[in-house]
Length: 333
Image: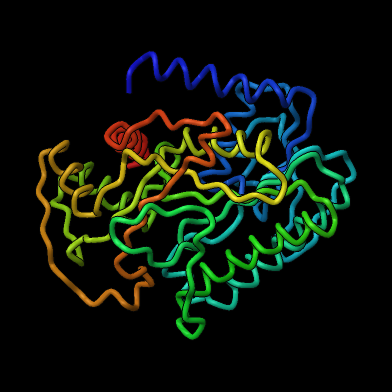
């Protein structure tokens, strides 16, 4: 990334963040990758108040400073907070494919009941804006070579247990639209592509983290498939700016997609890039991964023009995101 791009992103983020001066922002899932980066970005550059909903207050206190307030409850419980809330960003949700397969009932309950509880809380507080973080998985299985737009939700076989995740996310998106229509909640949905960068835990089970571990430990990358899935990626700093853009400028009831379209590649191509950057090799040793919960081969070429029309642009490329990820994880190893 060029220095001028870094400066432009910093300026744009500050212009967004300055609009929260004197406001209170309520964030769920704040100890996760996206939530923690949101909180830290806002704390570093803003005069706003941050309220974090968490199950583990001690963990949250280790991550954030004394300016943060805490509401201790899980998503299946309606939050109780006496103060004013201006904005809500709902980030909390399981992200592990294995968790979806092993705990499908809990996956659905956490997503759907949690979103109802937070939307009811938003209605009670009469918030200025509400953003729900969704996923590219709701697009299903687009055809190779097709550019995917927000209006193209996928269809899923409800008897396939792994589909509890995208189906529950679709239900949550529908809830956001319903609360906007019936109660006037200024809710918006942001569908994120696979997002990484600084803040990923060393033992994260997703493929980008395994590639980074291989680079750090100087092990060859071993793919359990041919790595034919193709998707866009997004650096965590660009994800934060996308969330804040939608929170402030998104239209009520609308859905937006966040991705860096220039990062579109196959898993194999990404593995080769990481290997070439770090002097290791890529091996393919195909295995039956059906019990691991991984999705089938996908071609997720996302169209982000709707979000870009709000003034947002990603600035961190794939190679720079990988470097940031590896440098961060080195500090954890």
